Image 1 (cartoon, rainbow, N blue to C red):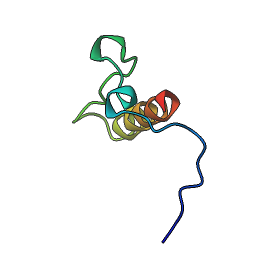
Image 2 (tube, rainbow, N blue to C red):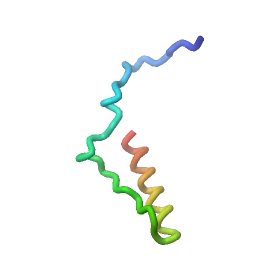
Image 3 (spheres, helix red, strand yellow):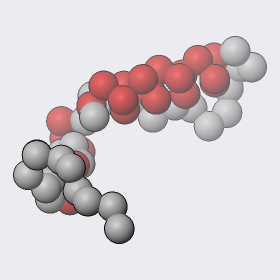
Image 4 (tube, helix red, strand yellow):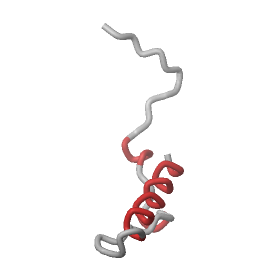
Length: 52
């Protein structure tokens, strides 16, 4: 059995999502240039981590 050692109050699922109107991320292109597609995905991923 693992004890919960956190002192933070539990977060609600509604607090874990950004409002779609305030979401600063832009979706990466599904198809594109060989270099631009992974670069856009990495930018989207970094923006996602910043939101967290």
